[in-house]
Length: 284
View 1: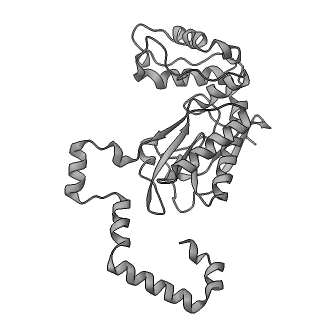
View 2 (view 1 turned 90 degrees about the vertical axis):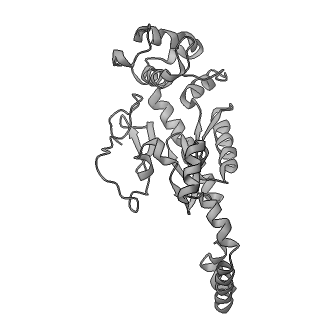
View 3 (view 1 turned 120 degrees about the vertical axis):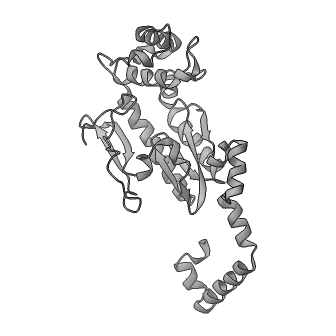
């Protein structure tokens, strides 16, 4: 157990030096970081290389050469506080009337500071503020918007919520493993191979409802190819860049693949069925 630096939302976490190269082959094991010398605080998972890259690059990860989707628990810690009051989160926790949506990240960061800080809160730079608003006004607007849970502000409860959301993440990962499905966690989101989103969504909903007694919304980040503009998509075709599923589709219908598959089954037929099962040959 250890005390660590705070993350960009003001929540305790692990300090990472992104200037230090990371090794995709080695940094694959996860460990939990607890805080304040107690297992009741923190507990989130760290150590994976995919957690150390910028979120806009995670969409380019592949799992077994397949593209991926990232599915998030939406407004998770806000929803958890509402659940403690036996209420549902009514809408997006990080939107305030009168403030443009482009400042959502600022409001989200302020919300996390409010639930993680017990004392004075560090102010953002004035150039980061929406025109006509002060930081005090934003905090007051959050208190008004979230009046049912405002008593939790400035209590430091966020670190306790991390223990719960990390337990939820652990359960989601273990249940997906039992389904022979790999997911890569990024705290309250999970990266999964495309085509397996529905089983992950079902598992995430199921685990959250079991632990919190309420429903929660999920958000799915689009696959990179879905975000291309018409011009970029035309350029992709011109350069011969293809979605991995297109390549697989062509491959499995080729004569070469049929011959390879025949040689494969001739080989395992020679070795025997028991040999194939002990080496998980039939899972490929």
